[in-house]
Amino acid sequence: MSINYRQEYNLEIRGWLERVFEKAGRLAAGSLLRRSCPLCGGVDTRPFVNNGFFDYDRCPGCALVFQNPTVDPQAVNDGFTGSDELLEDYFKISAKYKTGVPTKPDPRSHGKLRDIYGVRPEGRLLDVGCSVGDFLHLAKYFYDVEGVEVNPATTAIAAQHFRVHCGFLSDLRLPLVYDIVTLNQILYGVPDPVGLLRDIHAVLKTDGILCLNTPNSDSYATRLFGGKCCHFYGYTTQNVFNPEALSHLCAKAGFRILTMRTEWLDIYTADLREFYDRPDRFIHKRNTHLPDYERGFVVEDEAQRQLGQNLGQRGNYLVALLVKS
Image (cartoon, rainbow, N blue to C red):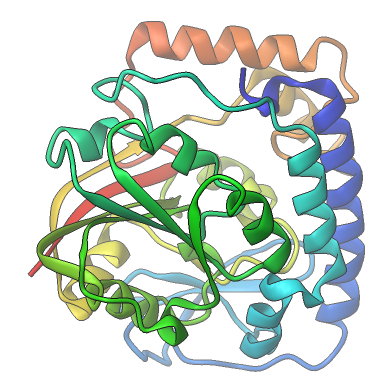
């Protein structure tokens, strides 16, 4: 069962997010840096949302949404390597609620495998930003897997089971041997998304594929909740893509899009009530103080699965399969 359905986990994450918001307020009151679009370099940007602490602009040239002004990009990178105590606390909470090693999934239907498996059912796979190795535990049944992780603490957990390279991909000088690279919920926190995809391009074989998922700035949830959507929590979100912006990124980094879809509505009845009735205490997908909150998630998520709704380009997350070109 997803840890999003566990009240104990959600209570801890809500408390953690409240501390994140406190820090975001302190950072926003300090020295911030204006920047041009990190995807196309555009400077004529437009306001998109404010999350209560930081402004996010949208670039009319490529449609990327990005934090502007922003905290020091080097501080962002340093935080993921262990200098940010709040991020370290998040990793500890996640490790605490790990539910064990998953059994062998059906790769043709599993949400994190089906896009890859339908195109490349075997090969050597590198998961960039593998954290504690959750995805590697799923993929190991079908692929020869390795990971890349910048945080030493989470690297140590994943390395108990897999070969994990600790550091930034740009510094590791890995060989050009991989058939598949995966990027699971990493792109939004990267100050230089073009540089990261070019680093991935450099380790993929000629016909190698990249599978990534990342928040969608054009989602129904973003349109409804604005800066209070889960994509804009706190201070670590640097970039939020939509299909147009992701297409620009792929072209700049040397990839061609094979498939692109969106998934998850992420709009729940209890959240809607709290958003309109008590906006002061609303935290998207973390209002676990409400009665039967997690049970409502289970029921509504299952109803969506049963209906098989096609959200078009409005799902809360983008899932794209790219080929090296």
